[in-house]
Figure 1 (cartoon, rainbow, N blue to C red):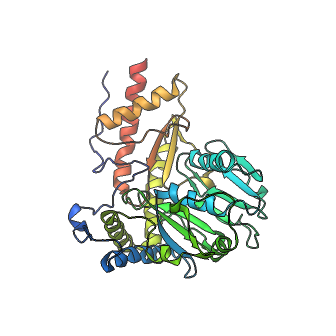
Figure 2: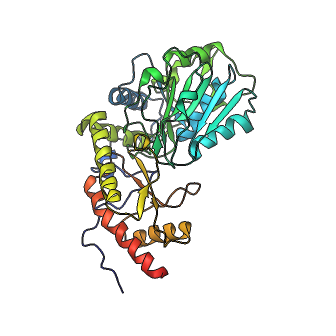
Length: 382
């Protein structure tokens, strides 16, 4: 027996966790002022790159004495630059509770082969015991687990009098969560996440303590050109005023500037956080009234407000992975939700991006469709 489909569809079915939905007001005409066909070293290119850095500082509330650089290879490139340039000076604790954090563990343990690394991991849906972290060491962690739907609840666990550096991958947290800058020495994110920018550009944010490490420590391994942040033992300040190491896409830069303008129009960081929280609330309200689905995080205090991960709990489901894929396929086939299957290494389920560029009305419209796809797939397997 056919199950009636909901009458209302999301106006925008894009709920991917990266690249994420563009800003609601996006149109290609807004990029007409891009300095295409011009050198990024020309005055117009430098001005736009500097505006991207200044706008990032303004909206995220980054302290004036922190450096902000635009670097190659997205968030991955930014994290790799920090790991390869700064680690090895003292012991390091690697904290991982999802796939990207696990990737940084692989870098440090199998590529850098540091023998002074301690690895602490947690299952998907949980985070490690933060009270066990030793801040005499450097600490590497993801603020928000994009593939597990969990985040650290706050920065209270980070010692103010730490000896080591904190290196934080904040790629799905920046512009959606309040990052405590005095607690963070190296912070990274990418344009294609919360503001829905274009890919391939990373942001690297350094505290004065991180700069001091760069200027006082030289790692024993060779560094590729795109990782080098010092010249003659001093920080290459040009990187942090828009003089990028390699050629950026000025079209992507323009897109980021447009996104920053939109962020200002919705109330800056507070407005963006409120939008993400409202989107997440719409998902949680649905989950709380249906007994066949649940959120993946076990502790509500650690639940992400951007990458919201769900799991099916109905005992009639025999093949969890196959069922979740079938539901996601039905939703995509109907044109109501694209790219919401769980990450390949995560437990089977759905992952709905709830960052601020998504409209709450679209999340609310999606929920009945998830119920329709679930009931339809349950009926199909019986």
